[in-house]
Length: 143
Ligand code: DQA
Image 1 (cartoon, protein in one colour):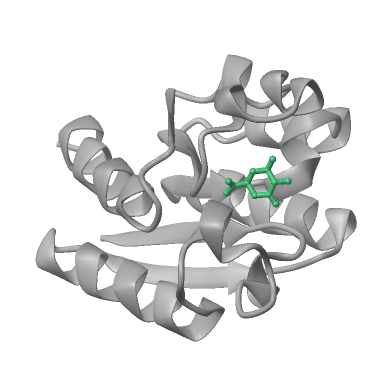
Image 2 (cartoon, rainbow, N blue to C red):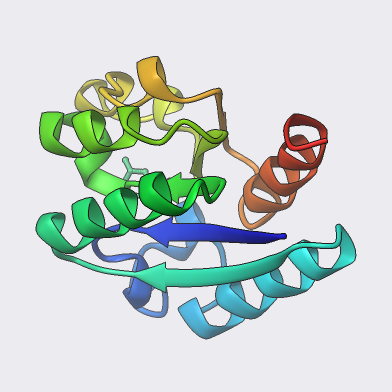
């Protein structure tokens, strides 16, 4: 089964983001890790990244049209994009929100997620393993 993994703004630049928060790996390494984790659970992961809100919305529409399960790290859009929330709500297959860091343990503006309310669940704070945990949760949800 195919799953769509959407990564939001600035996640392609993990190479220059604060490694004490996001870990010591770059985006290609994260992408490979997600692809391998998916494979070990019998999924094929289509892993994408965009800094652009409209592009992410179009990918969510695509997942809604094709009934594709979604794992999404909306990055900073998590905290304020009602447009991404509305698009995520259109996805009727399972949708899991993930974060590398634990936003609740960081600045106050990161404590709000406008996405969580339309996700099956949220996993944050485990670095790349947040994605592996989400893949494992998807396995249960798509049985
Ligand atoms: C993030 C957390 C967000 O607050 C932040 O804006 C990001 C990454 C995470 O994966 O920890 O860009 O979603």
